[in-house]
Length: 148
Image 1: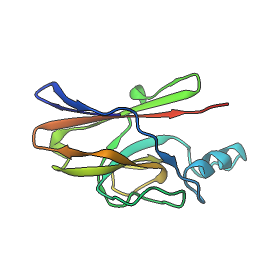
Image 2: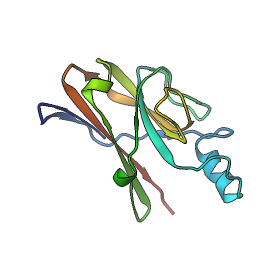
Image 3: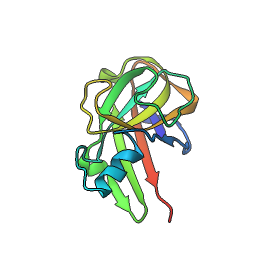
């Protein structure tokens, strides 16, 4: 879910969008499987959410966004697990986020604020692009739901 605000008022909000958890060596679900096998090369913690303008459909072999343009850290206090669900929230302030048309979102494990750093966990193409204009802040809420 993404929200966009200008002068404190919410301008738009999307519904929940399905995304693809990637599955290739040292990324996505493979990191969780490695942790279960006691291979602790990567922490498994989603640390950053990134925005890009790529348009190619996600697939399990993705290692990065199509074209990453902006990135924000996931604050520890904004990460909540409840039952089989974990929710991450991150903030893209106007001053640090370029005015652009964003079409993709990715979640990264063990990333830094540096673009394309860390290990891609998941990627999605937005059903409707996020067109960021001057004076707009954006909040991305990312949710992982497991089923048993």
